[in-house]
Length: 140
Image 1 (cartoon, rainbow, N blue to C red):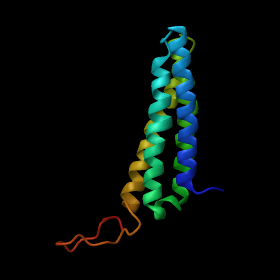
Image 2 (cartoon, rainbow, N blue to C red):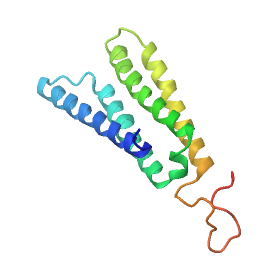
Image 3 (cartoon, rainbow, N blue to C red):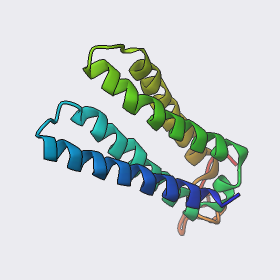
């Protein structure tokens, strides 16, 4: 299996490409009805996943945790659920998938916050601050 930062960046690139193609299609047809779904695909699928990938590249201890793999799975599932869910909601077919995707999006960010709290940022999470006698991460 590829390392976690690579998986986040690769998946982000795929979602960005899909978002670009979709944006071109909307522009060509002059129909921007589904732009909220397009926006969420780009925001969570590209932007958030790229930020998560950057964090895990900078913090290998966090990237090697089992919870980080869960984080990748939940984030990917969020995009694959929320984006079509918004399409269904806009087209007045059903709001259920969008609601599930929204809860997953919150879970994704809660997981990320917990992982950052638990592991800090960077490869050495026991580095002392220059003029203080405290560790860089209080949860250790």
